[in-house]
Amino acid sequence: MSETDLKRECAKKALALIPDHSVVGLGGGSTIRHLIQFIKEKPERNIQVVTPSMQTRQLCLANGLTVLHTEAVDHIDLAFDGCDQVDEQLNALKSGGGIHTLEKLIATMADEYILLVDQSKYAPALTFEKPVVLELLAEAQAYVTHQVKQLGGRPVMRQSEGKDGFTISDNGHPLMDVFFQKVRNIRQLNRELASIRGVIDTSLFVNVATKALIAGENSIKWLNKSTQEVTIHD
Image (cartoon, rainbow, N blue to C red; front, side, top):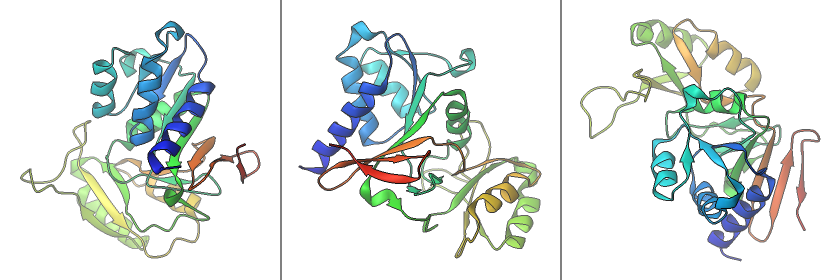
């Protein structure tokens, strides 16, 4: 089975979990794009969408789906998202989009937050090959820089070739990429980073995801929080 076919099968399994007449959180990634197409094909199920991603929002609207304003929603039935990496404890790291603050809000509002990833993004423990991203108050930049260095991190303010100055989040705040060589305690690191005054949130997702659906070379696997075991779907 091709990678595209596996991701489509992964999206089908995700669709089967969504109740009719429900509000669903959708993040980003290629599997989410397949899921949007499947939801479009089932208009009778009356599924409404909340998303932290501008790209996903535009794709949903282009496919005729109802997208709700996040600020008007206080509960989400089920949320799906991608990530850069997830481990066997369901710790996850996101680095690319810089929208992790809103992603965490949507995840917290959801009864279940399920990651949809391919096998290359699964590891027994997070490797931190990509940085932890901090969204922070602009005024706290120097202070946060000093504090993350004390924690062993190498901070770099995110910049874009297409923009003069620092990259700004959708919330209007700068983003700091923090690189770590070795992390012994992921929970403690996330706690320490989040507690720095001026940090709005981190892109480490600890105790947030409830499950992960992993598309492998020949099968689709569940990573379940209740057991921390990967089981192969029939």
